[in-house]
Image 1 (cartoon, rainbow, N blue to C red):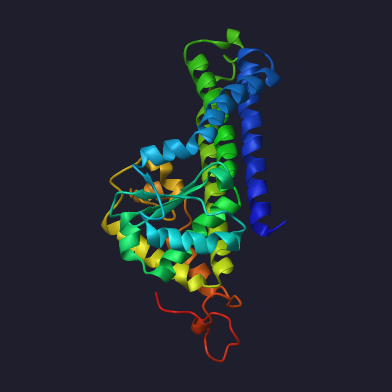
Image 2 (cartoon, one colour):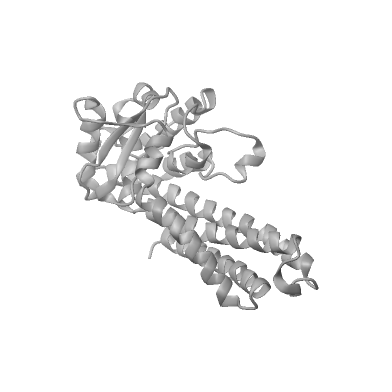
Length: 309
């Protein structure tokens, strides 16, 4: 198991532990049963997220104003995706264009058979073929690793925790629980407030871990990590200059860089690793070139050298 997989597994273990505690508090407080609260919270949250999972591609495309396009309508995008998909062991996914000049891209769909790779008009205008290829490789890495499934499972557990916490909070505020929580009302309220925040932070950590992994997998697959680093520099500047004016901040985790900007406090809840860290990690990678041999650094036997941002 890779380091990234181990970290993701550890984060899932953490969010499951938070879920068990939150569900147990609800069950013990309302029904005198730890297991009862666990089951109720899980069933309701899983039902909501199950529907979201099977309809996620349609909802994401609709909420971001993305339009499915044919190869004839987006020949450059289709050419690059058709070229890259076999390198990831995939059939070329469907394509979509987001009608905004903010440069960005995302992938959605519950599995490879239902995947969609979307690019904004802005990224097609801003990036050259080498940079766009690297961005698309990042998105195909998400498809290959079924990251939508990973994030949906994390969302299911986080949603269940939030639901359980809300029930505990309102029951304690309005005198529910049959008197069982009166002696420990402060502890119950603290748990009800902190559990969903902790779950959200762990969920965001999982998202950041998958984002870093997609950077690495995409860069190594095409053998040109500097191409993605160069693209990220452009995309970060482009998104700072013109933040996204369509879609919802709830979809920010899908994009290769965060298209919605907020205060410094919002960075604590970012779905992406710091852009500087991502770029530095890509700059430091060394790979055997198979994709762009003309870019080998002279005298280093093939590994990629650093370039200026």
